[in-house]
Image (cartoon, rainbow over all chains, first blue to last red; front, side, top):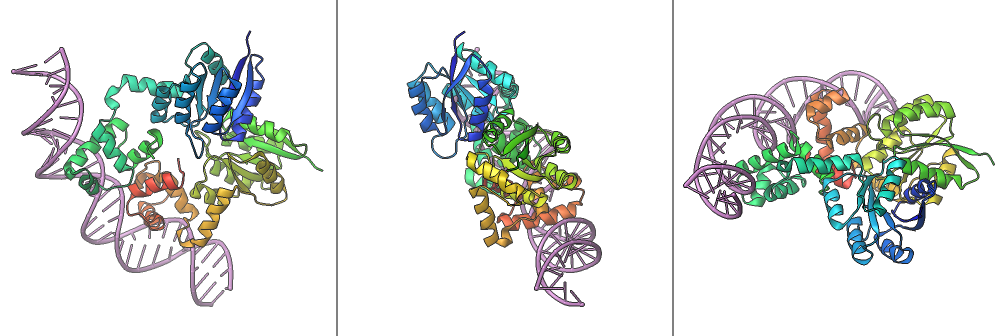
Length: 208
Length: 208
DNA sequence: TGGTCTCTCCACCTTTTGGCTGATACAGCC
DNA sequence: GGCTGTATCAGCCAAAAGGTGGAGAGACCA
């Protein structure tokens, strides 16, 4: 049994400490380094050459998780990256996988899930938390729920708090058209009101 | 030197594990129990009689942190509660303090801050992270913009996308009262519509 | 005791939003 | 040449939200 070296990247000391404690209970897993930012992660990845990198997406100021993943994939492509974050935003999932993440875990994951993900990652297996997987699955099954470019544009403005009239003016279309787009957006997001659409968009789609 | 008994309440195993590891390094602090939900927290507080409770506000389904604080204050008022959460939302801070929290820490707090908060709490000292303190300070300078606890509660539900009717049902008040609160909230947030209020609240206040 | 704050509620009115049906135009595709 | 998807617009109606003004009850405080 080979020991799997792991690098932890998270700006929260408590989370790093927790992961270290949990992973420390496993004989075949060893934490070889820690980083509190994307910049530190790049350095640490070079220095410690871990087999697996467990990384948060949100890391305060500076480089964000997605950017860090992209750079890590370029520089040390042999290292498997597992995203370990709090929210299962559709946009983040897609972007992280696109950037080259091997797995996607939520922070409420059970210890066993985390161990399995780390072990799977070195074997090239992609492991994700159930809610994350179901989101991806749902997107594949219901392609009709994907917003068109125009709808996405409108939704983005909607989250600024604009009225239908303002939306029309901004997009050079009539209020009637705005309403049509909105009706389609509501249907795709599975909501009934503009308020719920905004809440859903900002939270789920990561529009900020 | 007396040992300070601490109860950890957080739905994330990793966070509990991290806190336990960090607090375990301090000779005068002992973690006597853990809970993953508000319901469990009430039980554990009775059973272990901790001096200090470190609690997250967001805890998945069921009772939220604010509600748990209120119930804990009623049942075991001698126990000091410190909020330990990710976001420094104005509304959450106000509501938590109002519910009886002794301290308010952010999850990116340094270990030393956490230790100091725990030790301070048993002496009746209120400790909060710098960003939290500065928010409160700023609010003191602009008192006319402070949301009342009830308004904050309503705003929090508003960001879930609820209608006026639903808000009334949830808070056991009439729609008329909901509208009154909303008008006050809009004025304080400097917005004209519910959509803008939601957008402002989620972004500026960190409500999720 | 009087003032202030908070929470609660009401009535009336206007504006905005949402649900429904239907329509035209254009582009890409088989 | 049809089919599909996207984007545009209209009208009608019901529901929801917002604006205005007023008011009572309870808490707190000077």
